[in-house]
Image 1 (tube, rainbow, N blue to C red):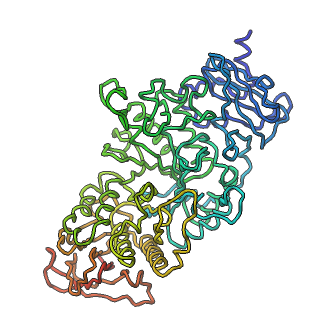
Image 2 (cartoon, rainbow, N blue to C red; image 1 turned 120 degrees about the horizontal axis):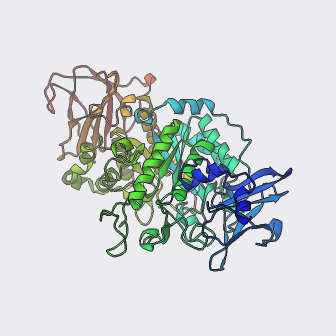
Image 3 (tube, one colour; image 1 turned 90 degrees about the horizontal axis):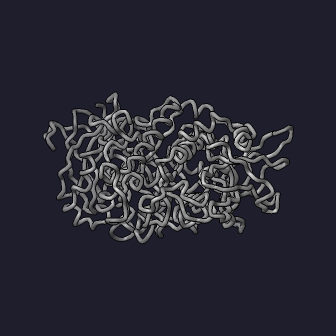
Length: 638
């Protein structure tokens, strides 16, 4: 009789639900597990369900029952490992946890892995919520996204940590902007500057500010630091109405050991590998998801779809992909377990990525999945049918490293390191890359972007301008972290807001205006984005002028109507008579330089006629005078 009772349950979770979940294919399982308003036996209340396969007993606890584990016991459903309970008269906004009695008799109080909202830190309870009823106003955006191919479209990302982008002058919640407040001010800034997307650090609930949101305890809960789940829906909705995409950082690699979180959830390794040589990251002090368990894979894939489909998020940037792919990542000999073939590849994580990316692509809603992968793992952005991992894009960490190493150098020594800037152009078609200058490069004593630059103050700003122009012209989508576009001096600190007053000072304003011009130039000319991964979209004019540290190259559009010639001087030496070869006879119209910025039609930009004078292996050339750290970008037909 007991088994029959367990099988029947409330009926909210069916046998089909359990079968799909236990086989890793219940992609809307968040509609079943967690806390949901329901009517049962003609009573309104809250239905709870949790996966805890090793638990001996579970009770739902909260203010509503004095946190008494015996007041609202849960029932186990057959052999699924799922427990359920219905609490009459309970509504949204209630604090709760699961009181789990382990096989050894220990009592654990755990937050709900599937909770839609969580208590504001340092408190750790889950909060009942109802996500239904939000009226979206982004139909045109979503329809456009579904049809668009991000490969041949403009993608320029503004990476943001909401808690330190700006702060309000109020004591409540450390002066954090709410999701609603941030939607309005952030969208205004992003729209003005010309970015196409924002990427948000740390939106899923996390207990420790210093983790920046990369140690998650509430995977389905937008952090309460900035508001409620529906307020986050408003944030995304408003961004879309302003023509701005939203990307979230997503962390399926690991989770913290906090007592209320996923670690040893039911008294035994549940979400993590049992063997600590696979189940823990020694460098980070965190647990590793066990990708061999269908229920864990289901948790993560459903979570990815949750953000994409319930919150209309346009992309997920997957953190620490390399740590998932390599069994020996951050581990010494004897601290890791080889796979069944004796190798260091995590075969389960590989299959997880193929499954995840295939499902998101098959949904056909145009969402991107971006890999932060720091090694030379092959086929990260290739189709799983070709034994690829299936990501939309991959962060180009190699380019970032080479670029920064070059830019840090005193200009005198750049001629000896010319290859650092040209090497990325030997492999730019090997993956679908995003060029990134992210938050990771401006913390932990690495210096801010402006402080990395050599020379006196004005030299630093001039270096950044020519460097950002090279980044813009280099094939690949783009990402800048907040503060880098106006010359933030101190390293990023999650506890304090950016020094926005610098954007009003002459050098900071000039840099910000210039970056704005670069971003608008990027969106205006398809040559800069529609052939990012095509050898026909890029051509060197002169990759070898190391003695003068000048780079010249062309970006071609598909229709050859408006192609762009870049000539960039990375020294403080003026080159009054610099000559550059050009692809064909014709007029070359200056569209941007370091002092004027972007030329508008009314500015009557100078047009330079080509001369039949062989240079750089070309039959034609132009005179291109360059100032110290000079920039010249020309438009031409062809």
